Image (cartoon, rainbow over all chains, first blue to last red; front, side, top):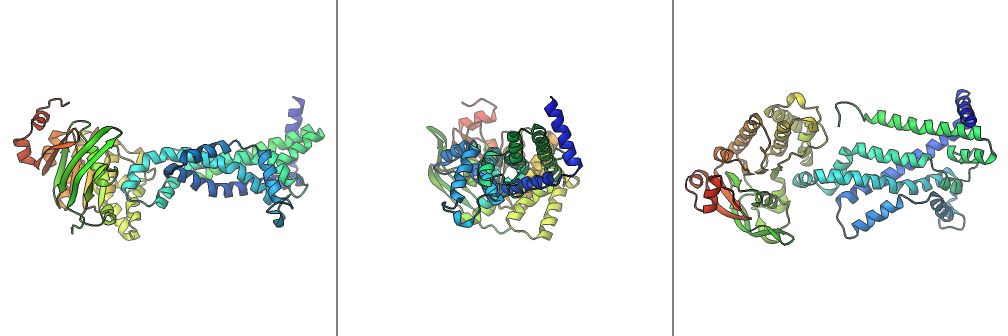
Length: 234
Length: 238
């Protein structure tokens, strides 16, 4: 109980004093996770929608694989990305290992299946509702996808926020590919792991509360901007 | 209206699901004008026939031939479902959607939307979510969304089921106006009174086949088949 109280106090002082290190790693956390979210959403939203409306031979297998990939262990993803980006790996020439870009790549791999799978579930129900109408109106496949994405945007927002939640709280993969280098690749989660390892539980908890506050704030801001949960809307 | 896709001919059309035959074999020609009412008990094949004509059902056998290419025919027909499907958008956006597919210019689109909103009495509701309309309003909006692109042929699948008298009257008025303006209408209904009010031609289906076909007054006055006589008498057909 004392540790939790000390953590809360620590979090308060870190924020109240505008701690430079805290601001830096918080901004880096946001930069990495929001970049990963943007890229993953760009891939996963059309992919999930396409899987909902398109019938092809191995569709069930593809959906099963996608759902299974939601449970990808982050450390394994981190290890694979590490091997791909290391000097001896196929993409070593780009020199991306231990950079925020490597952390973004790892997070994209982790959250894309999650966003695509939730998108697929939501779009499948909407497609069942719209199917006959959109066929009847002689729409092209591309227009069907765009219509579903537009009209199912609130469900897609939920999918994206689930992806953000997974990304911002992820530690295993980004620790491996980022290296937790001070002023370079340190983010909130890796800083918490470091401080816990050092035995500074108060600071670790303080950073933890900042992380929770950050995740809540981003969710609330996105909900406010997209005008969900308001009366008189869908 | 210059008709380019009618008449349409069905030849030897049959549809089944698994081992169960749903329709056919059917031979049918729909001419360039008229208000055809499909009558028949539940499971007679009315919806399947409408969906087959509209291209929403895969045919097991037979052909459907329009008087224009299939691509053109697709753009000249519209369908109103028994349960109106509302896009999760405003009333205005629902009316705009089919026009945007046809790449209508904005001024023409705005004019058409305002005209149709007035006809269906939803001018004040243009910015309301369509999913929040009443059942009757939804069906009128679905009908307006179908008619707004000026189809040559309109298919309707029991559009007035579960609606109150006021809404039924409004929808029938819209359909009669569309018919007067030259839209070919093919509609399934259970309601014999409605069939007598609207039809110029009757098709009676039973067990997936056409049992009676002809001009409305004569067909009602002198039915040729025992099944249609029983149906008109309100008997249960099995």
